[in-house]
Image (cartoon, rainbow, N blue to C red; front, side, top):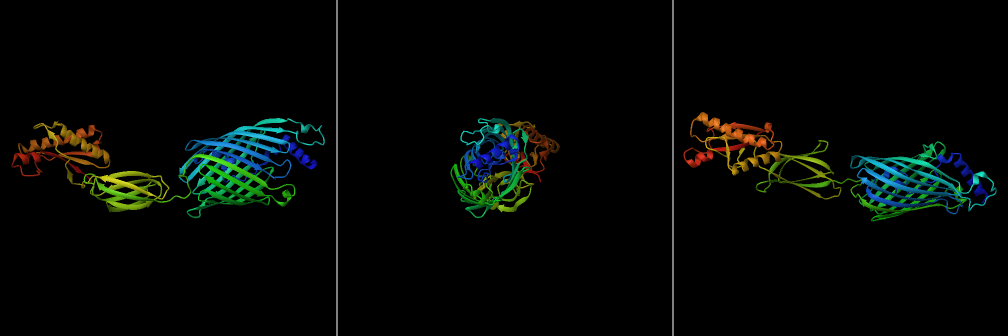
Length: 491
């Protein structure tokens, strides 16, 4: 007991002389399963809300050995910001401390599997000394004042960089405490590997140390079966071996780690035990390392008949890279990774552009059905009759406006096409007058389309007079057919 009291007294002296500011008395073992233990950058994570309870019992059987209980809760403010609250209660010998801190983190997303988290934590650190359970050889020692308390501001910093299963963390868990800056640093590297449909493995390395603290590193290997059961083995540079096991069941995760200490520590006490319970809500199942291709079933059909249409299909990704370029008739199939794509349909149709997003990372079919209007380029089409007042260019009747509204609808739906509006008359009257009248009627249709929001640069009005009759001008019925407005799709 005297030996323990002597060791404890030295630790107290270190605190009061501000030397212990660089010492990390808690070497958590479940930091791979719960990164928020060390890193405030994990205040934002794939789960909307989670809470945990961690108990770290170091050197079991050794009187006065460190005991650490940690309680934390974190939640996402939105998809890229989060807040967390943590309480760390340390007890070692006659010395104890409680660290209460609030953390904030921001997630910068570069791609689905490429992002950076940054986090900072601010709080209050309360140190205390209790000699109630201690046997003192010298009760007059001024350093052993029962009830000694000291409160100071604490700050932590952390970042985590992820790209395609690889993660690098840099953490400064004691950035500021006990009125001093502390550059004690923890670094973690890990890589998640899909070893099969049911098995993921994750090798990892941790390094920790500071200016006045011995350097230490861990090497770990974790295996996860069916996203549910995990096991871990590790080696710590102080010649300790680490073994762990855990299970994830719905919203609950339970983990246990045992650290087999080196021979020197085993002479005084037993191994180190750590147990952890995590409760999670609103977890994003889409955030996985393996990104599977999604099968695209496309179908190009006629808007008017519902039958298959022949068209050239060009699909590009968000970077403009071509992923599909082929002439198809109706149905086509291809495999694409999740992302944003643009499909352009051309051919004997009014050109059409479709933008679609594949967000699912499950192996399932994505359907892309496109309705197109069959109109050959440089050929005319007639949406119906546009009527005018006799010998005038004044549009007449509700049906005429319905035809022009349909033209506006087509040009709005297909924003890349250009249209030539053609005016035609029968052969009654002077040729020059008929030519002038047909031009004025084409201009009237153009003016109406512009008034509905169609750009003037997409419209050309041409009057052909009586030069292009559909049928012979030999009956009143045929003359009515020749008095018409037609629309031509330009290249």
